[in-house]
Image (cartoon, rainbow, N blue to C red; front, side):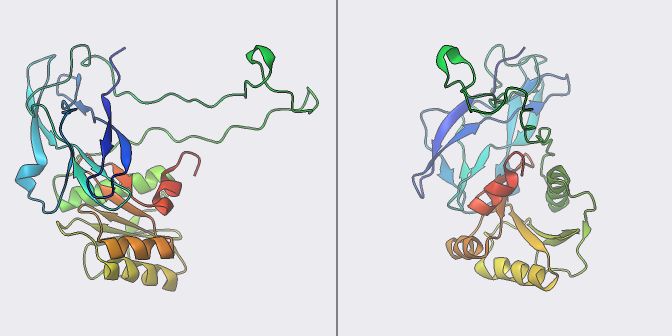
Length: 264
């Protein structure tokens, strides 16, 4: 089995919150996973403006020697900022031993309580023949696609919505003034592939359109959100996600975290 992906604590320079970030792994053409090397001694920077040329890095495969172009590592903070992670060398591949095996992840840590003496299950006072409750159904790992174009952003969002359980994804009947609208039964989603943070008006327009259709709504942005957009989304319980360039939506408010949580 290959080594686990590199995980590091990341402190947001805007709000000073700290989150654990796991470096993404990408599939080389030879079949081996490769990942960029994170600089553990440099601080992340907030993304203010985007240019497509700066969003891609060259990652070297230690297994076959190929150099591949992949999205630069980013992390969406709960404050709405998009953080760019520093690298030791964009052309350098994973550490030794990290090139065999698939992408890693944390294991299932659920299990019976071990409060009783001897590490066994605690005595709950229930009859011994009472069947245990069924564990919550877990989703399989989400498989993203890299985002290089606006179409890729829409495709990544549709894949994520299907992963959440919505199978009837289609273009929304009412086209938004900016971005792309997607719809499913009881749901409206707005995909904003622009290089500017989503505004308060953007969030309000989505919420009003969804309310008119008696549907829930969710917003996906490549460039994050302004502070007032984040505040209004919190008050309206609109889930906000930032799409990183691997195609993985990162929740940036409590409503999005509840939607993204296992068993939701």
